[in-house]
Length: 580
Image 1 (cartoon, rainbow, N blue to C red):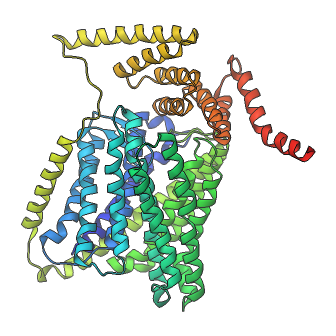
Image 2 (cartoon, rainbow, N blue to C red):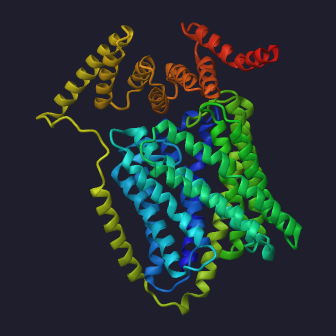
Image 3 (cartoon, rainbow, N blue to C red):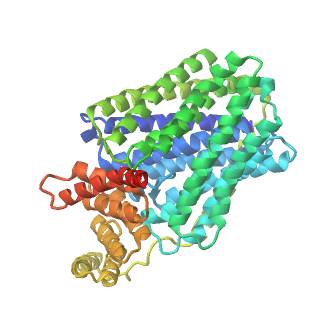
C-alpha cells in the first residue's frame, strides 16, 4: 500500500537518525569525545540531521497526505525515496567527499550524495503531485501543495549559485528550502492536532484561517527565492523574519481553539499537549538566540522534536504498533528531549559553539548526555515497534495481494535514470581546475608554491591596507585551496577594510565552519556583525573569542573592551534618553 510504504520509510529513517545520534551524544561528553574523530563526527552529523529533520518527518508527512491507489506506479515514489535514503547512507559511509555542515541540509560534497538527495526530492514532489492529480477536491490539497514548495524553493535557488563554492554554495542552495521545510513540519503537527481533537478538529473558519496563514508563510519562502536582485544578507533577513513571525501564531491559535472545543478535552490534551508544550518552549528559546552557539540547536531540537512527539502520538494507531508501549516510548522520548534541549541551551549560555564536539561545562554535558541517551533509546524503541507492527499487519494481507514488484522496480529504475540525467546536466558547481600536468605530484607541488606565494603577498597587502590587492590574492589562494581557514579569515578582514561587512561575515563564518578553533575568525565576525547592526550576534561572537583566547593573546584586552562597550551600550542609551 502506498501510505504504508511511506510509514515504513518514516519508521526506518527515525531508527537510523537515532543510531547516528548515539555517537553524536558521545562526542559531547568529555570522557568519550576523544574516541570520536572530527571527520566521523561530521559524517554522523550529516546522517543524523538529514534523517531526523528531513527523511523521517517528510516521509511521515507523505504518509499522512498520501492517496491510496492500486498499482506499481502509485507505489513507485515511496520505492524511489527508499532507494535514495539507502544511497545517502552509502555516500556518507564511503571515503571521499568533504562534509559540509551547511544549515538545514548538511551534505557530503560528492556526486553520489547529490544524486541521492535529488532523487529523494523528486520522489517527494512526485508523491505530492500524484496526490493533487488524484484528489483535486481533497480538503488537504493545500498540504500537498506545500510539500511541493521546498523542492521548488531549492530549484529557484540554483539561479544564485554562480561563483560560490563549498559552504557558501550549499548555504545558498538550501537556505530557502530549509526554511520552507520548517513550515511543512509545523503544518503536519497542526493537522495531527486536528485529528486528535476528533469531530472538533474538522475545518472551521478559525481552523482554516490558522492553517492557511501558516501555509501562506511557507509559500512566502518560495516567493523570496524567486525575487531577483536580493543580496544574501537581505535574503537571510527576510527568511528569518518569516520564521520569527510565521511559524507560531497559527499553531497557537489552532491549539487554543481545539483545546476549547474538543469533546473529550482530557484525551485531546493527552495527545497534543506534549508536542505543543515543547514546540512553544522551542519558539521562546529561538527568540533568545545570541551568536553561533549551541542555543541554536537547542531551539530547533525543541521545535522539530515537537513534531516528532506529535507523530509518536498518532502513528501507532495507524500503522499497527502496540499502543501502550509506544505511548511509554513517547513519554520517555519527551523527558530525554527536554533534558537535551536544556543542556544545549546551558552550553550556549557558556559560549559553546555549535556543530563541534564537546565544548561546554560539566553541568551541560551531563544534561546533554543523559537527555540525548534517553531520547535516542526511546526513538529506537518506537521505530522498532512501528516496524514490527507493519510487518505483522503486512503478513496478514500478503496472501490476498498480487506480486507486482517487478513493475515497481522498473518504475524506480526509470526514475533513477531520469534523476541521474538531470544531475549530470546540472550546472557544474566546482571552480575550474588547473590544466592537467604530465605529473600529478609536480602539479601539486606547483599549486602549493603558488598558495604560499599568494598568501604571503596577500598578508603584506593587508598589513599595508591595500585591501583590494589583498582580496585578489586571497581569492586566488581560495581557488587553489578552498579549505584553508586562514585565507577565509584574511579575505574577511580585507572586506572589512573595504566596508563590505556582509560579505566579510560570510567569509568569517566559512572559516569557523572549516575550523571551529580559528580564534581570529570569531573576532572578525564580531567586528562585521557590529558594523551590520547585529549587536547581539557581535556580542556572542566576541564572547566566544574572549572565552577561548589565552591570557597572553595581544588582542584579548581589546576584545574585552569592545565586549564591555557593546554590553553597556543599551544601558547608556537608556540613561541618555532618561536624561532628556
